[in-house]
Image (tube, rainbow over all chains, first blue to last red; front, side, top):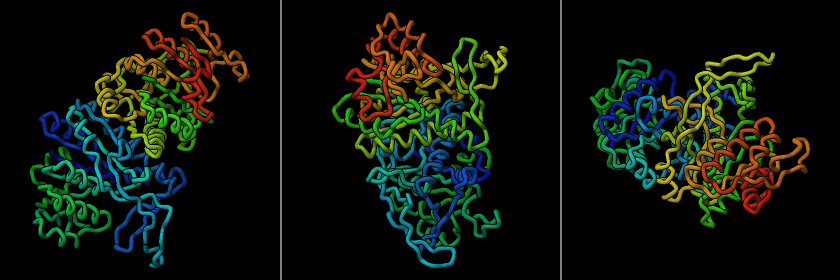
Length: 268
Length: 268
């Protein structure tokens, strides 16, 4: 079992990802896909006159400020445009795909943070209360097994659902890590619009190719911005028994096969 | 088994529909929901600078002209905003709902019309070729039974999928009719923002309360605009063995229970 997360950044080649996925699926590899939609959400938010806002928590992690209006835009892009486009591409390539969000059948469940402590633009601490974000803690494994057992290829997307039944924006990398752990996956492949974890974020040739599991905390020193959550997800997955995590490039042909062959940053 | 179709017109009370649905579901009534999203699609299309266009076929039926850009807006509204909002409301009300489009698992499959003959604004016949519309002909009954058997409440939305794997805009009423027939439903309830089939479309007190199955073709004489497809769907469902079709009001409290109690236009 492999869990593949494909980001929603600019330049990602979803056509190549779905072609590779459909081929691997045909070769009887069991795969679950998790996807993002960050860049397109920014574009739609701007068009609809509700520009994206990002906040930095006191512990230094960046996330999208998700009020109810943003959540609806988020769902339109993630669950509507991108999820259905991925399912359609997979169907055209012969894979019988089903797209699900985390709220469907309470597939991805967790706690909504009712208050987040952030550092504002002036460097002051503030508390945000109208934010619909949270963290995935539980997976509906029965639903996953029911559909995987019937031969469907699953394309899973945030939002998740809170215990109170609210849709919540959750980090896709960490959601993929929880899924990989619940499915006892051999590998978690995290694809984005860079070749992997870079020593110098401005230099794609500075790729870190191998990291030992026990050194993953040190690798965090090289992670910038949104990559911090990828490394955090990797750590969580490895701690929960996933055998290998690979950060790899989603802009190339056959990106999943390349990652399986060891291209990118391999952590094990 | 009951199939409920709720339209996407202005004024529809989705909160009341989902409250009623969750209660009936708790009382062990087997229900499948199909929903629309027409009004919200118009609103988003306007906002995104791609205003909605409607075309009238040579046989007199009106439908949304669905080029690829419209299809993406359609998916954002139907599969993203409305489907996930319905699933979230159902989850908050205690029903373990799953939202699926017709392309997921090829749930609703049919033929894309590669050319539609329309009457243009000047009354001339024209052929449209870049339209992604079609008609549902097949249902993935195995997938429906798998999820219904596991106790999930299903919220199903267009688009459907063509045999070639293209997402296609299909009429929701007729999709609900095909679903009702495939599930051998006792009843198909079609809720919209009017009390039922009206003798005079401008007078809500002119409700036709009962129509015998053999007179359903005559009822078509009273159907205007989008209601024509509702009557067509009703006819198709009854011909395929569905026991009763009710056209009822989705603007009131407990709209499904009211329809089950005989409020609206009952065809049997």
